[in-house]
Length: 363
Ligand SMILES: C=C(O[C@@H]1C=C(C(=O)O)C=C[C@H]1O)C(=O)O
Image 1: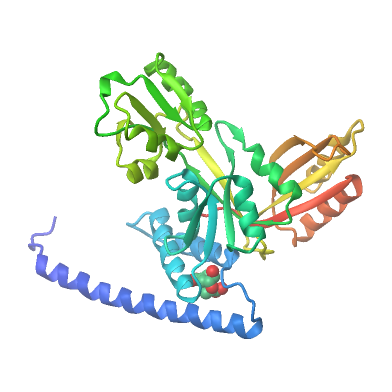
Image 2: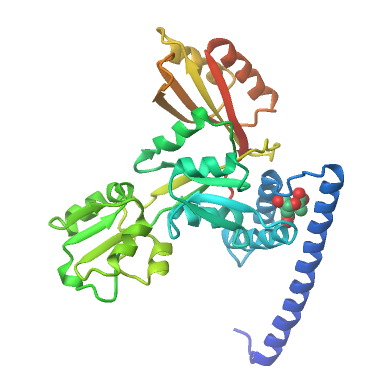
């Protein structure tokens, strides 16, 4: 500890100075982004201003530069909002997500696009796909897999018939709370509402703490929170956004069985995203039903030492082929090594569709 007394006024005046500089710099940055938009429009009248690969690079660079005391994730979150505001100056981005309001998918949408994006809740996963296909919105956000409960089949199946591309991914830590309203009798909770996925993620906790309570599955966590508001003997399992939206409080917090419980969401759009330097590719492959088909499909990945991050099998809906495989792997389809693997897979498969190459989720 230094002997010199801390001069509060001096510190505050220093903070005021720094804020003035930050303000000036942020506006200077916004002007640069506006100029970038002008260049893009001059090159192509229908240009897309939002560039997922560039945004990922900006955030990764800032995180690598950061020396603290602010946490790197926190710094990235602040820069995420600055970029979101800069982009909105030109053209606020419109994003459809699996609603209703207050769901984890909305939280993922805000985490990925920032608060300046216009986000629109949709009632079902197909509707998110349809809105993007129709051009009513620029992008869509849908959940694709949970670390505890596995894949969301509906999302995978939607890709089979859709021409949309995957433009990004976002991973969200999922914390569930047991929420109650102002009128709830906390010692008399006999019914619990939630989405089936959330019940599954909190099964052990519920068995231990509320073995007698009736578990009522509903269409979303937000819907569960809404129902609880008017029932004195009910509680909901949902996240912070739903709690805030319906003014509920936590009777128990972080009740998910696995502390690392997280959900991965995909950003869907019409864009072919260039390389960011740390990318993933998703493909869907139909194989003929013959012995060794899966081995034939995987062998080129192994030989070219491509890091496969996910493999899912779904029954084919066309009836012509028995299986389709969804494969995620590290790398971008423009990288020679990846292009070589894709070429080999095309020779062995009945059909291959590249769903997209996109930056590995930064935040
Ligand atoms: C400024 C650009 O356009 C948009 C805004 C960005 C930003 O504010 O840094 C980054 C990527 C784009 O979404 C750009 O492409 O560089």
